[in-house]
Length: 638
Image (cartoon, rainbow, N blue to C red; front, top):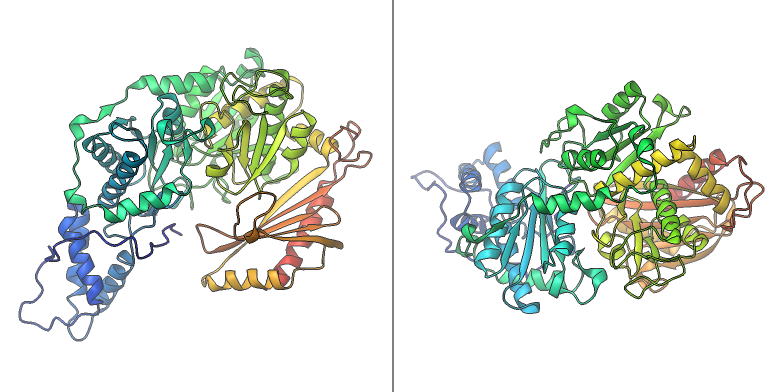
């Protein structure tokens, strides 16, 4: 499913001459066409200004086929007409996530023309808020079109009077986020579609330097009103072939920037001893993305010398040939890693998504099929939250303006108390972990554009395997730093004769077992999502899993100081929680379920009252989640 909702009336197609460049089909035969004349005119107009030979040829062929049907339109002509209608159903919307869509010719696709005009809009906005002489870092992954989009974006910035700093191609997204803060740039552009299907690409924007007024927003993805302002400038931009580009004025960054990032990430492995790191066996897969070289380098330089990679998935490949979907959360994505880990007797698997801004983790567990257990995003978030909170309390978290040098109760250098942050749909466990270590906790809306802007944040995460473990340097989710933090934790635990599962059980004994599960409904007709939400709002359940529903919060009215968002949150007397919300990128209704089950002998208060070794009720929690999922499905009628 591509992520390209289309723009409203203020995002008109690029103006053009309208004379087209398609072959003339009016050769004396009947040229009656199944194509909407307005669509055909828009296609010809776009074609006249497309700077890319490849997409010009692609679009010209479509136009020719669409016009070739005559009075009895052929299947080829009808298919071409439908394809043109889809490609010219409105420009890609520029939002807080930037642009994302299928690569191809046309205004509704990711292509060089789209990227050139988007960059012209970004430059106009930077000129408005910063003035002349703005600085922009540009990076890219290895997807189809990325290198061309990377080159064009930098060339537009340079021609617009900006300082264009081009990173080497095919680097992880967090390197771009790091560069924005490290170099004091006013903005950053990352060409990536993260873990979208192979046909997609995208364009992500960070602001920093003089473009923001607080340190916690430097190097963070854009939020309103910047997105609307940039979109307005894009709509007013000239046709792509009329936007100036100056490749000669682009500054190409050398290896020093990546070296600085690697040095910083390597320094985060501070909990374990060097001998324990060398004895830790790690399997890494970058999922055909750009994280392989960087992740293995930082692990090696941090002292983790026993690292094996999934060779079939190591080299960047935009077609992602060994997986059905390039997302380490998907079923089957880690099959090759599991096989290698079993063969090597590994201690941990670390799997990055294609742009390495997220990572998944799996650990040995004989109770699971194949002897390996893939941790949930919330479980990884709890492990990292506990690790970093303990370091902050001990004064070892880091030296940046968003890290505390003192004990947990002291203010950070920036004047804010150290804080753990997570999205509203993530587990509540980190709130209890923060309290136990004397830290603050913040809940935000979904997305790192909100999480990463939390003042005083020392760690932030979202349940979709995104973790910000070094916000002083990278104010975004970062799968590379998360990988090093996880490896460091595993090495330390292994030296104690324990593993991550043991630490999770300790957290359950101290704070209650926080078990989470997703419940997702994919639909063909998006109207069903609105109908399901309407049913839930009108008739929320009175009980869930035998516990009375005690509170229902409509998130469209805002909640606990958060801005309004489309969703509904329910709590039960047993402290279960359900959040239902439409997906922002796919035709899905997503529900996030959480139950908190006390460990017998403990009060779940965070005071550590659960006795050491007390059994943790995993089966009871899983059963409760199953019942809630079934009951909620019935209420939603889905």
